[in-house]
Length: 336
Ligand SMILES: *[C@@H]1O[C@H](CO)[C@@H](O)[C@H](O)[C@H]1NC(C)=O
Ligand SMILES: *[C@@H]1O[C@H](CO)[C@@H](O)[C@H](O)[C@H]1NC(C)=O
Image 1 (tube, rainbow, N blue to C red):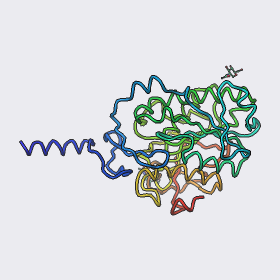
Image 2 (image 1 turned 120 degrees about the vertical axis):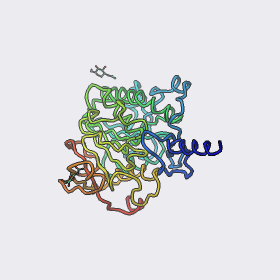
Image 3 (image 1 turned 90 degrees about the vertical axis):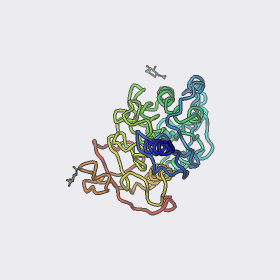
Image 4 (image 1 turned 60 degrees about the vertical axis):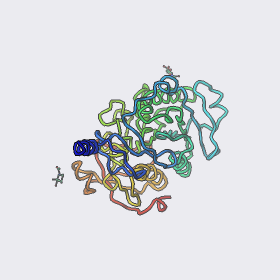
């Protein structure tokens, strides 16, 4: 009898139900099988997520994209946001929003908010090189429940963002040709939903390690029909990030997987996508190489023509390509 219990226990372990012990370390994780995964919050602190946890009915009923907040940053207010309110033209007219300038919009991931590092790093990089509008989407209300709950709220949060941007464009005379949507993790899928929800298409969407768990084959995921040019940067593929090419151009720096250089654990590699992107906005110095097939991308063996990764150039275009990059830096300190 004792032997049977031990046997059953090891079967459960093999089926991926074991609780992983080292915070942030997802080396146990098997996509589509494992029940638990460590996910970072906005400060990078790992939280253990149960991917089978039933979504919270109460939160699904009471929180959605109507709770979105839109924070505007410009060179006149680079660190203190002005709040834009959907439908309140005065909130825009009395702000520093410049309709004739490009607008970048940033969406954070699960368990984060408008103050999380992804926003501050990218906002400061954008304003350093461009006299543009930066709108940070703070969707903490829908992002702060269980991961499984937040996944279900992503489409609605994205649709509200799309409506808001359409209203902003109508109100100010701006244009979708001026819009670049940038999202990290779940935020990447929010941008996919925002882009597909509106009449026209945002000129660019950049997915920064688009979230993986529960997004493989999910029709609500970011895809290349979400904007005119959709690009993704994969840095923790198969763990916190999705490994599949889902964009017009998919970049796999250092093979697209954990560990990225200077990282030991998955949560670190997952954040690397926005660190690389912020750096690319400042210097536009990461050149990917076109791959002939996916296994070349995974093994950093691509030698085709060059395509710059990231940056904030609105007219950037690509074809359906998979691009790899070799390691050109050692630690995140060297990035900015
Ligand atoms: C924006 O303008 C278009 C065309 O005038 C209109 O059909 C649409 O309802 C407007 N949308 C919003 C959100 O204001
Ligand atoms: C990928 O392309 C390379 C270069 O043409 C080739 O050597 C390799 O066998 C291909 N791999 C697969 C899995 O098709």
